[in-house]
Image 1: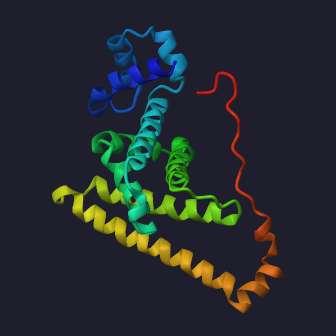
Image 2: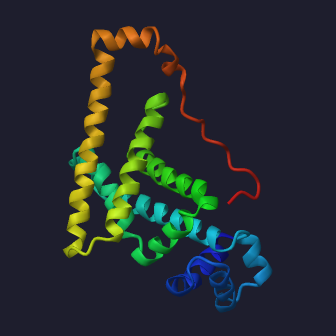
Length: 220
């Protein structure tokens, strides 16, 4: 099934700039890839929306693969994060992303769009070896989701040579995140922070990251 989904998506990509992530695109992809329409709709029951989300997921996987091929130990941590975001965008097509962003910006699809960005942030932190299990698991992903979302919007309108303006923008956003992480660390270390965490804010220590769920039969 995964290979069939890949074939359908590859056949769909040339149609997206003209028909968007739509039912028409899925129909054309099924015809050109030789996949029976009933199977195409079973694999992508929500048509163009599921095609767009599959494209996004494949982009996350391409980023993981590219990141694994790099020597990260020679980089500062903030540069590792920046590299991951940059690799994620370099493995994407701007027109396809633009079409997807327009679709996921619709009110009925906004939750899916948020979930997709969160998934990318989670993929990046996990690939970089994040082992946090408390509230830091959430705050890291919230911060990076904001950075990634803002950078994508900037990148879609950036015509600078080699998208250098985007990478500069990304660098500034990453610096903001790292400053926030340092502020959190200082807060935990100072006497007032320790007092609050042992009293009014002690509930934050009980917040745990979600445990990975085992794959279910038939889950893709």
